[in-house]
Image 1: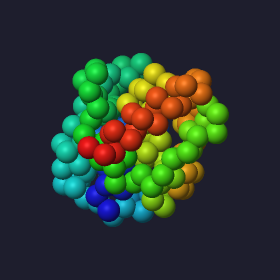
Image 2: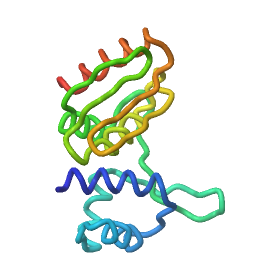
Image 3: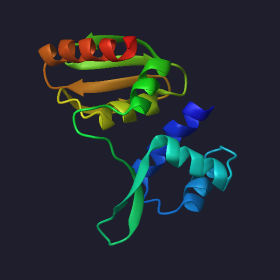
Amino acid sequence: MKLERHSKIVELIGKYDIETQEELAEYLNREGYNVTQATVSRDIRELKLSKIQTEHGGQKYAVLHPQGSFNDKYIRILHDSFLSMDMAQNILVIKTVAGMAMAVGAALDAMNFPEIVGCIAGDDTVMCAVRTVDDTIVLMDKIKKLIAA
């Protein structure tokens, strides 16, 4: 449940300019997660979310991670949700545990793999558009190494 909630938080702050813990709690409650402000506060700390300035001068929560390293949370999402992957030319299809495809897609996007042009996620399937067939093979190897760790 916690992993799913954390994935939903990452998804929500990527989609909306969320400024406060209370606002994040409202979004989570609308999505069916019964949370308190204290739970949200803990989640923010565990996800290591930061506030950044918006283009309109306000602030919002964002996931910041050091360049060149992957946040452990993204690796855990991949590790815990991944079932299988296969390629169709330059498209990588990743099968996940039911309900976790969006979190895996968001994790892959956040990792900024140079091979990935973009991801589309459903309930249990992620489709990644990859630059070339060779890049797809390289990406599959990278993902295998991440989830094996």
